[in-house]
Length: 193
Image (cartoon, rainbow, N blue to C red; front, side, top):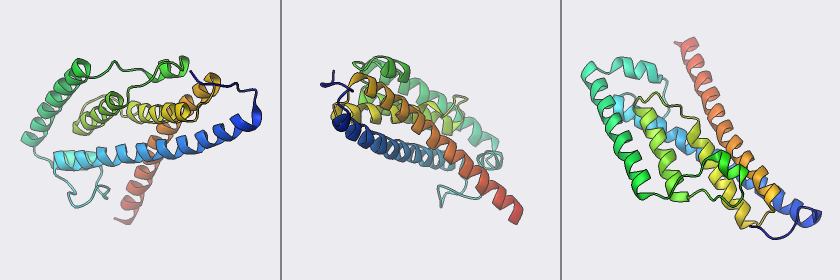
């Protein structure tokens, strides 16, 4: 897959260092954008704090403030978006490559468009009320970015695996950072109100 060997320290250390920095940056930005998309869809779907993506009002408060008909319609839309979206991905997209497979086999390339569509669909359906977890999407985006960077920098297979795993972890960490920021914001709003 990649030329060279990890035993050529000066050349591969510099490339690995660049890959680590860029992977962290891109995975963090990807996670942040997914978090903003999540909040925007939640606010739009349930009709709360429409003037800002991040607000003092929590998701639970926003859903509780929405009337029952709106909540039912949002869940119906969620089912339709999920069903049609995943059917389109599996019908027309390239076969998905899991993060585990991308780490295990450096030759297994995550298809960019399909992976990004899959991650976006996960975030949108979670925002609409799906009980799926929202942690897979930033992991996929981080791993995808890391895989592409590793290929671009022509890292050897062992470093490729390391960077893809780091990308998945950085994506998950971006989600954890968003959750901590949300908790801090809610706690601060509760103490001042």
